[in-house]
Image (tube, rainbow, N blue to C red; front, side, top):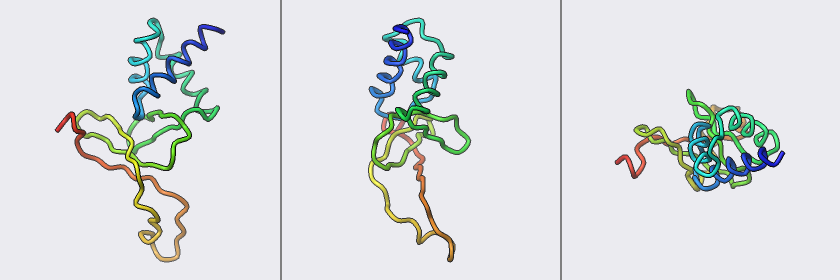
Length: 122
């Protein structure tokens, strides 16, 4: 049980330190710095458990594998670098987008993703 807790803590710490949504392989690489021997199956198992427990949220972009970030942050959007494929949080929101919906439709929520190049890839 202690080993599993240490592994979970390393995974959560890796996501927290990144400050951006991470793919499972990115989580693995970051968590292995403090927990050598950590495997991808353990990462997937813990991501799934932490998602079910509400500790993590999945960031799902069209045509992409899910990335994971800590839950509890305010409503926000994302930016994907088209060069390195990393995803970053975007603070702020344009607000009510219901005016974009066809007449007679009701908007219950929205997701907005910006695409371009991050400052490192420029």
